Length: 393
Ligand SMILES: Nc1ncnc2c1ncn2[C@@H]1O[C@H](COP(=O)(O)OP(=O)(O)O)[C@@H](O)[C@H]1O
Ligand SMILES: [Mg+2]
Image 1 (cartoon, rainbow, N blue to C red):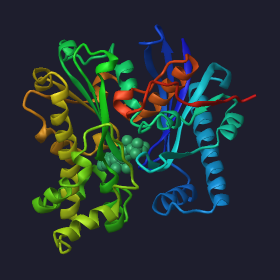
Image 2 (image 1 turned 90 degrees about the horizontal axis):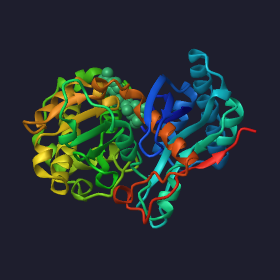
Image 3 (image 1 turned 120 degrees about the horizontal axis):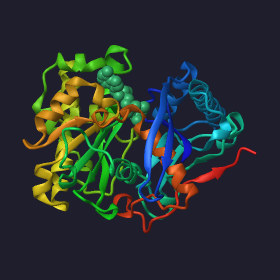
C-alpha cells in the first residue's frame, strides 16, 4: 500500500481541497480509498488576486510570480495541517499530486494552452514531499483538450464500489456528474472497458450561479439555492442560452470561466431584450441551464452507448453543486424515469474530496508510468504519461 496526497483548487475558488489517499493492489485497477480530507479557504488577499486574474488575465509577470508563490505556500499549509491531523509524517507520503489553480484554459486557441498556477519547488520544499503537477500539458501537446482528466479516475475508483441498493450495477450504465464551477460528466458503460468510458465538460456548473449571485447579493454563492428558488424561470432566456453553440458541439470538449462568465449571461439577456428581468429570475433560469445542459448531454451520449442500459442507469452526483437542493431538484426532474439519482456520498465517498483524490491517483499513475489520459475523451493523439515531477531533496 502507498499513500499519496492530492491537492485540488477548482475554478469556483471556494478553497483548497486536500485528500490523503491509500492506493493498493493491481496497478491498472487498484483499490483507492480516501483516508482523510479537508478544505481550507484561501486567505482573503490571495482570493482577491486569483479572482482578479480570472477576470483580467493580463497581469504583470512579477505579480503572477508572487501570487504563484503565495498559492504554493497555502497549498503547503493545507498539506501540513492534514498531516498533523492524521498524525502522518511527510516521509510516509509517496508523492503529492497537485492540480494547481487554473487561471486560463484555452485548448482551442491557435496555440493551445492551459495555465495552472503553482510553484512545485516551493510546495516540495515546504512539505518535504515530492510533487507531481502540470498534468494537462502533455495531453494538450498531443492536440488534446487537456481535460477532463477525471473520467479514467472515476473508472478506476468505482470498479469495486456500488451502493447497497444497487446489486445490479454491472448491468447499469453509470454516469458520474461532477458539478464544480464547470460541470463534467463521465459515462461508465455497463461492464465497460476503459476504452468505452466517455467524458466531457457539459458547460457551466456553479460558475454562472456564483458570479450572478456575487454581483447581485454580495454573497460568493447562493447558499442552498434559496435566492434562485425565490425567482421564476424565464423560458425565453433559457432557450436563448441553450442555443449557445458550445452545447451543440459533440465531445471532446472542455470549457472554463474564460467563456462562461457574467458577460456571457449579459450577452444572452441582451439578445432577447430581457434586461428588465429580476436578478432572482435570472438566477432561477441559470439553475435550469445547468440542469438542462447536464441532462441533455447525457441524453445525447446515449447514442454512443447501449440505449437500453442508459434507460436503466444511475446518475452519481458529486462536486459542490450536490449541496444545492434547488439545483438537485431541477436535475432530478429531468432524469429519465428509470434513472436512479444518488449522491456520491451513498457510495461511501466524500464527494467534496473526489477531485483531490483524482490528483493523488494521477500522481500514482505518473510514478507507475501509467498513461492516464483517454484519447477518445480528450482528443489527444495517443495515451501519454501525464505530469512532471519535482523532488523535495
Ligand atoms: N450549500 C450550498 N448551496 C449552494 N451551492 C453550494 C453549496 N455548497 C457548495 N456550493 C457550490 O459549490 C461550489 C464549489 O464546488 P466545487 O466542486 O468545489 O467546485 P470547484 O471544483 O470549481 O472548486 C461553490 O462555489 C458553490 O457554488
Ligand atoms: Mg472547490
